[in-house]
Length: 441
Image (cartoon, rainbow, N blue to C red; front, top):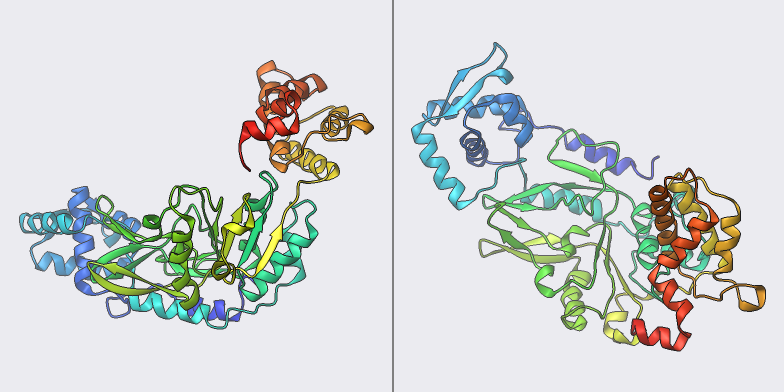
């Protein structure tokens, strides 16, 4: 679809061709030599094809570099076939001494990075005039295909994505705040990022597979990766230190913060107000990156500017007053999620069973519905949440497997309901006592 691979993206793919010589690549010859030397030193005897797999540089570049390293008495070929990729190299005494010094200063051994200047220019091209965007109806439909109800919330998410505006999403636990916000990743256009960046011979890690999802088509240069717009989320574990870029001496890389990883996408601060550190300090740390769309990190003490062009999203099940006006201005849109209706939670329960490929008696749907129906309608009048529907489906599956049955029966569902702690507590205590037991929500 053109939305995910438009004219600008096709031009970038044409630019990001795989470099095939030292003249074409944006890295210095000395950096590449040092990286290759560390690889050879680490592995002892290693074929050129294996070096290629590790650092991702074209075989022609490796041939140029290894021939020069031979001349410098750093390494030597020890065997292999007629084709250069099959040639095996080992390190020499002089090379071993140099590699030992390099590995002490910077132990990074891995994929070749992209030069900082190249990263900055490619990002600027992609982020310029990113908003407002036109989102095709079919993209919106596909993004929300597994979202039940909350029509007003969906419209607000679409509007936030179109204009690049921040949002505040709040409501009781289990109403799907994180799940719903994550759909913005599919609403926003994709972006190309370098996996690693080189600055002053040091390596900065940008790509994080926990938050960055690769799309099908990829640039020819393997140092770059095309991803869906990032959806980066943090929770109660967040502190100001984690919002900084810090050096990992074991990996030999500067690990970027959520602020930088979210560039081109969404940064969600989940469970706002439940962090050990004052949440106002965390929000204040975001103001400059939000206003300038850039942040400053320090590499070997030198300041460098990185892109932080993300949409902020703040989520809480506490009172909205935990954010003051200055912070709310950065998130002018808001979504309040109420507890789902009985019909909605029943639909989600059924979808979860189907996704688990579970067979079940149809009467269990009617039995599950009664958990949340009003007492006047013959139900238990418990408080529904989408999290209940997911949990009960999974617990019922586990019980069904333990019992060695082929399908989930009404008896199995009853066991699952008894096992779920929040349902058990609601059954046992009045709503007032239940709230006291689980604490403030």
